[in-house]
Length: 104
Image (cartoon, rainbow, N blue to C red; front, top):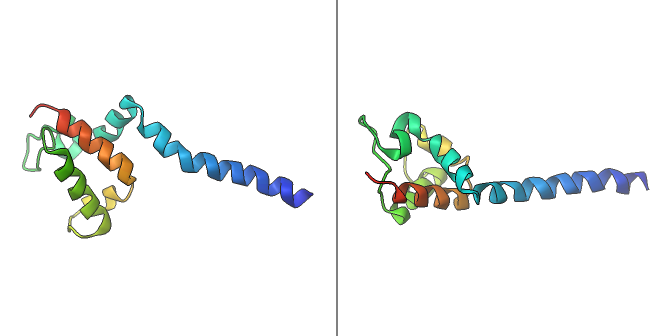
């Protein structure tokens, strides 16, 4: 009986942890929050003022594919391959949609 009780809380924790990123990312403020992590290099709302590519107004499909290519290592990068691995494909799609909707 003790074993069953010990496994139950762990199973609940695993189930909650597995569904949390998807539920969190559905919130538009959460998507903006994820996209804000790109601001240091790509500028606020993806409007770059430096030599790093801007993300604002970039086609959603193109941007999502580039991020996925960084994530899998298909596209080389200095830091992007490490950052992209921190997002699910769903989160990448949501951030790509966010940046695509921004004015250049």
